Length: 120
Image 1 (tube, helix red, strand yellow):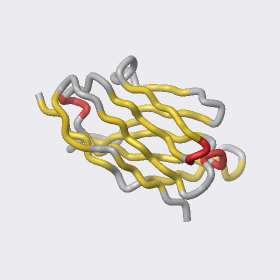
Image 2 (cartoon, rainbow, N blue to C red):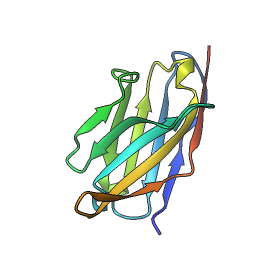
Image 3 (cartoon, rainbow, N blue to C red):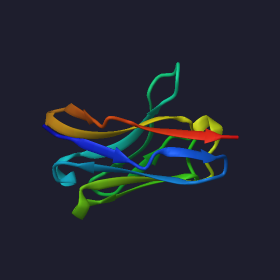
C-alpha cells in the first residue's frame, strides 16, 4: 500500500513562509504526477500545484508567483515552498500521487493532511 507522509505545516503570520514536504513509500518515478491540494473549512478540496515526472508544473491562479512545487526523486519527496502567505491560504494541505492504471484510468493516493494556518 502506497503511503504519503506530509510534514511542514504550522502557523505563520501573513507574509511569512512555510515549506511542506511529502515523502512517498515508493519511487516517485512510479507516479505520473504528484500534487498538493488544500481544503479550507466549508470549502471543496482544490488543486494548489502539481508536477509530473518530467518536472513540468502547474499552479492554481491564486498561488502563482508565491508557491513553488519541486521534487527530489532520489528522496521520493515533493515539496511545496509557500511564500508571502495570506490568511486565505489557511487550510489543510494534502499530498496526492497519481498513477496510471490503464488507458485514462488513474489511481489516486492521498496523504493524511497537514494544517497550515496564516494569521493576519
